[in-house]
Length: 417
Ligand code: HEM
Image (cartoon, rainbow, N blue to C red; front, side, top):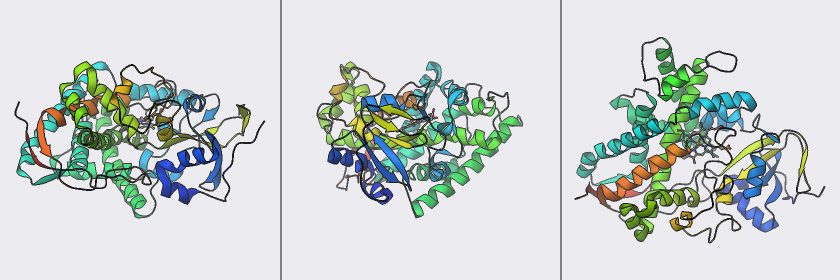
């Protein structure tokens, strides 16, 4: 075997926290290699990027998720011992539960809920001097998520619930107060949703049978048992929180509409399914999910490089979506690139790669694309607005990245049709 190119130094956690999305790409270009070894969080880690690397990473025979997600990520973003940490049959059983919520009929319902929830906000915005899109989008996504998932949420509480989901999303790679706030937000949310699960199980609350709340409350594990109240709450939050996270992509989408006025016109007209391509390019181009991790199951070699049992392996999501071998002008925003794109489950991986059923690829990919499409079509067709002077740059060192101003809009009004 040959040695994996190695970064010198005792630990690079601080560099990772500073460089964010650029940590892996920078080192790949410095070492001239799509695979390198570093040390983060006090342990050895192998970082990999590219289509073949992604195909390797999603080979279940070679990798396990056990012990891959750091505890601090589980205490904020994922929830402890949730689907992200499961392997084998146990994982597949849980994954089937998630994917059973994504039927065509339920996705149609989601589209109409999404349109209505945006529409309902317009009269209020018309009365306001300005609105901050990220905050509005997170609140709207929270309403959409709860309605679609069969979770009752009262008008006085919806804003705080949305803020709490937003705080959890904001903790990926956060330390200090941002981490502590996210942890408190998770505690509050788990308490709320655990109560909902208990009410469903006590037959005091009756969400429709095809909703996430019902499906998770009555889901049986391989041993025939229901999930614990807490585990069920954690998994229901694994539906609600990421739907709120779509608000981030919608905000980046609004930024793209603003920066590329010609593309904006095409989204509005939606000729030849342009909105779909635009949404795909937003998911490829803008920084959101940075990377994902797994551990080596048993020793193996790949391209002559040794992978030792237990080693943490990190797949560069952002870097693969911008890899020069896979994308022409990777750093240009060009929705047209998806026009005759040769689909591959391993080159376009904003929400993970591989197969949705067999592996850990995101269960909410169809939901994300659909909600983004409806939301961006709403922004181009149903309202008119201005974008005042503001700082729209986003810091690539901050995970998750977000435009500094959170996208301020003013003079919002219903569009004349
Ligand atoms: C997993 C990204 C939205 C539910 C993942 C993974 C990524 C991801 C990177 C992990 C892939 C891996 O480790 O191999 C995103 C992004 C989203 C999004 C960027 C944009 C907002 C959603 C939505 C839902 C959802 C809307 C639910 C409705 C899940 C679940 C998993 C997951 C349940 C765990 C899958 C498993 O472990 O098998 N997502 N996601 N996500 N996502 Fe998403």
